[in-house]
Image (cartoon, rainbow, N blue to C red):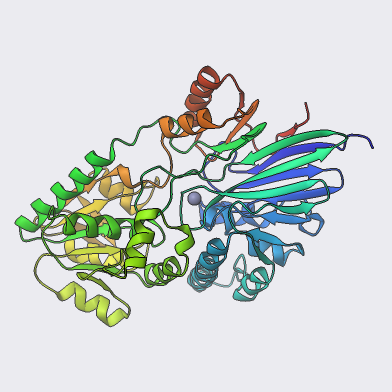
Length: 470
Ligand SMILES: [Zn+2]
């Protein structure tokens, strides 16, 4: 039999951080790895998300790496446009995606109602997808556990490995055989960080790979040590409480919130933080935490031991309260005395955190603590950049509270962690394709990888396609 053609093309997250979509072709088969939402300005994002440079009905599968919306958020569009194949993913990614895609459809519906109210006679807008499209997407889910290879197609075996990035996150390795030749293609997804709370360290897949596709979000940065991050957290909380203030932490509901709660718990148990009420005010964080509890197969040994011991567990410790109803959330605002409030959205673009900021920013005793990346143009970015006045719900708010930031809680590996991970692969890739990064960090990382690994490193433009046998 002749050698079947094998190629890889980059349809999203090419020299940018959003909208992951990578297309593999092998003989007559074609499949995507991830189909993420492109996030940006409304009109541009809508156009990019609705358009595919291939016919969705021609795809044989979409293999999903993890539940973040920039990797899964456009799956319902694909299904609505005729995709009928299976959607392999890990069991925890399936559970988290149920919560996140339903929420995504709900937010789109709300957003479109708001937009249409102001259309004044122009044709009404339609949401990118509906709850029904999301339900149809769930029908196609096909769970596969870590390190349990399965035959994706004739001649193609797939296997998930824990990426340690968020609950259920995976990298996927395809072993492709044709005409007596074998090629291993490792799609790295988003790579997590070693020694984090709750999740296991990213796995280094035994046997390595010939071709590697890897993220580069922090390709030009180092996060600083875990000790420095924890010391920073203790400092900022301690001085705020001493002033009699509250700490408001805008945090993404999935991942960062659970990790932060686990770290606060450990520091309090160790006597490094005083006992203070902690509130998690985000309905989605509550649902996501429930999903965490259902998937102990993803926990690191320490977290797993805490669960089996039956003692205090990492997500619901004594001082922690989950705020469910809007009334409770409002009551929290009127509460006096020191406390810690963790609330979404992480970049302050919506959600209940806005009410807490409205109430807290004007008082110099309080602190707003940022623990995640703040995108350009967001309220979070303006606050981090030191704005003295901001607008919330159309009202001017003077900023008197302390503004602090800690980058060490990132779920993405930094430069040295990315490079060390590649160096630990026992068979090193000949080709590395960098994706999921802004051009500058991507090019810096490409340089370091060329020097340290000897691989041929590419930073492909969108729609660039490569023959993988060569
Ligand atoms: Zn991610």
